[in-house]
Image (cartoon, rainbow, N blue to C red):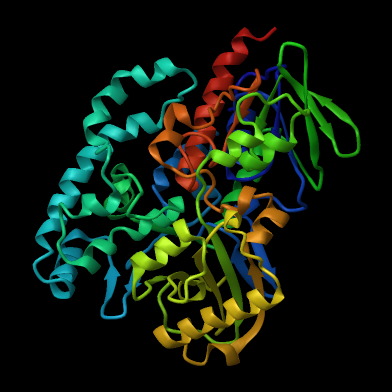
Amino acid sequence: MLMKKSTKHIIIIGAGPGGLSAAMILAYRGFRVTVFEQKKSIGGRNSALRLGNYTFDIGPTFLMMDFFLRELFTLAGKNIESYLKLIPLNPMYKLSFIEKELNVVSDHDEMRARLAQTFPGNEKGFDRFLQNEQQRYSKMYPCLRKDYSTIFSMLHPDLITALPYLSIGRSLYQNLGNYFRNELCKLSFTFQAKYLGMSPWTCPALFTIIPYVEHAYGIYHVENGLHSISLAMRQVAQEHGAVVHTGQKVEKIVTDHSRTARGVVLENGEIIESDAVIINADFGHGVQTLFAPGFIRNYTPARLAKMNYSCSTFMLYLAVDTLYPEPHHQIIFAHDYRKNISEISYKGILSEDLSMYMRNGSILDKTLAPAGHSGIYVLVPVPNLLSEIIWDENKIAFYRDTVLTLIEQRTSMTDLRSHIVAEHIITPQNWWADFNVFNGATFNIAHNLLQMLYFRPHNRFQECKRCYLAGGGTHPGSGLPTIYESARITVDLISKDSLLWS
């Protein structure tokens, strides 16, 4: 049953996962909701790429902490099983080092046995890892679910209680040294810093909860690809009366003399009035383009230039006319992983010794390609555009060749080139030019301690009244689960704030 209809009109700029999450819950709560997406398709980085009969997820391919997603559908009055088929993965992924390989599984007894076989003597640390990080997670989880719109929110008892568990001053890599001694074993629990676009040697130790939640709650695939989540969210939002416009760009947010958002101006000049606006655009791009010149006082171009950003990614989407026996998810580590990460994060150069993530989707999901074929998704972390690397045709061709050579050398796909029937490439420059990702930083603003919680752009955007944020650029951060949570926080703020709107 729908909640009582409201006269309050909410405009959402962007139909990415944050915007669509907010749309379906707000519409269910009775608000009049209008979504404007400038592209002709929805989803943003959580959308689909199609090469003939091959389907790829453009961005996210891991679904972890599925309970966040399930909760959103419940909050929208729906049963997620009516819209999506979530498939638990086991093994969750394969880790490929030069010297060793490890299939990571969700069963703790089996995982302990695999660690004992691959990294003898380190298996005892696995139980300490699960126990200690469960405690950290239990303290941090309530903090992730709060908004930090005022400095006083930093004094909330939940955050005060969690402070001893933040391990301030320690990195993810250092923290894993409490559990494991073998270098490769430690690295097996650090690659998750990729979700944040950060180096495990500088990523705050509190993010050890990410590998923990993988082992505690598992990883899922969504049948037909994770972009299906966006399609399902749009369907739910529309069932509740939301209107989703595609191919309509918002040019500017309309504000009044009190610095209050009053609606938007579309690219065609049409003005649409509203009671509030949610920005689901990439933060760095949106804050510089959606307001009148001089309106933004805090997040000025000078301030944005001083902030820390995630790395970028070089993407290869390969339609191949065969099905390789590679796992659904695989991470291939560079021979010198630390050097590789350093070159990406600090030196701003392209590594000759690469690391990459690869998904062989059709090994599990037969809907993604024709029978006996597969779509190979390849993600290579690279420096963002602050590095000033020029991605011209020669650079792209060279890097593509380097990536394919590594795949052919390190996997069973030794004849990959001969089976490619179609392909698509996204470079850091494409992320900015085609997806409006500021600096090409695929994982948004970095997650160092001074860019988190209150110090991250607020869900109730501090620059403009009745303007809110949803997405990776606000609290709690990037990655699908936290983007979903950002939308829930924002929706709850609007539901409360709207009681005071005239």
